[in-house]
Length: 372
Ligand code: ACO
Image (cartoon, rainbow, N blue to C red; front, side, top):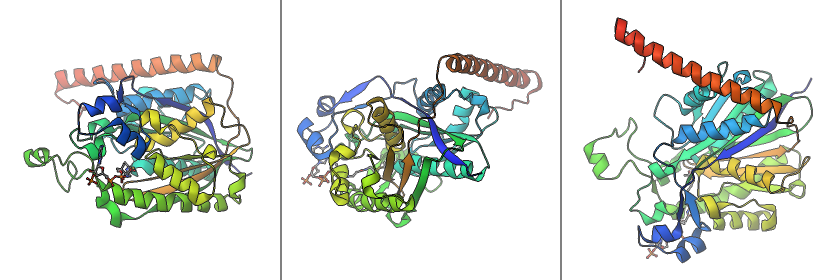
């Protein structure tokens, strides 16, 4: 029996605070006119102090689960793709696994910058198709506002915070993830990087002073690379699925720059109406941008059952990739499922809290705290 990896749930979460181009005009030497005409961005969301990559990821993950009827404890795998993870370790995915109570699931982070979500969905889909797992929660989540140098006008106007998630499940009905293309070119690593804070250049007073914990980017070169790979990856993945460009109802590209998306549309000889664009409201949310755009496309009625979609992205690494999907409506009705899930999430929080208290007490009485 052939197994297919279907997207059965989707959800997104963004912080409430909005930073507009007018706000940025007061922070660095820039203008609304420059930002809008060069990038298409009008505003972006910025995480509050009590928010982080893990909290946004958990929120998006919960919303995606809510629509499936699948309980967190039934999940086999949690993958979080992020360029701004909670820590070097533990993995953000483990924090999300705990927050949701996905007690049977393996969890790991995937580092492929803005292409991370494409990579993660492809990994989860392959595992489902081989029969290794039956379900996975795949999340792209970022708080890039924490990695931006707010005095560097060339980068601080571009990025925003947010998270988007898919639930993938095994089904016998044809459809779901049809094909994938994953590529990289590490020779371009220095074009887009956070140089310090890893093992190569550990945090020090000097690295702080020189702002090496923030995003450093050669915008022009990244722009050139992006316009080159978006169209080729799209063509490759469409051919890999045995389809033609005419079969594709919607392309959901990484939202980095409207001009990059327009160049891809020209390269593919497709009208802009066939591209999902929401960059004006969120800026570049890296690994979160594609699932967030899919969620909004579905909400706007731009994705119908049976439609063929291409998701395509590029990012630091350098990395790029694409997925061809057939959208098949396999959602179960919410309602009852939602209350089961809310109860389960509450119990998971309770269990996690009790475990933490227990570890503290262990440490107090026997000096063997296992937290660390
Ligand atoms: N406001 C006003 N002027 C600015 C700003 C700003 N915010 N930023 C740069 N400028 C100036 C530059 O200093 C330059 O001035 P100069 O001509 O006097 O030297 C001028 O504007 C033009 O600069 P360019 O770099 O040529 O501008 P460009 O049209 O290429 O746009 C941009 C710059 C928006 C960064 C573009 O190159 C781009 O989008 N590149 C891709 C970036 C990207 O996608 N990065 C994310 C990858 S995904 C990931 O993995 C995180």
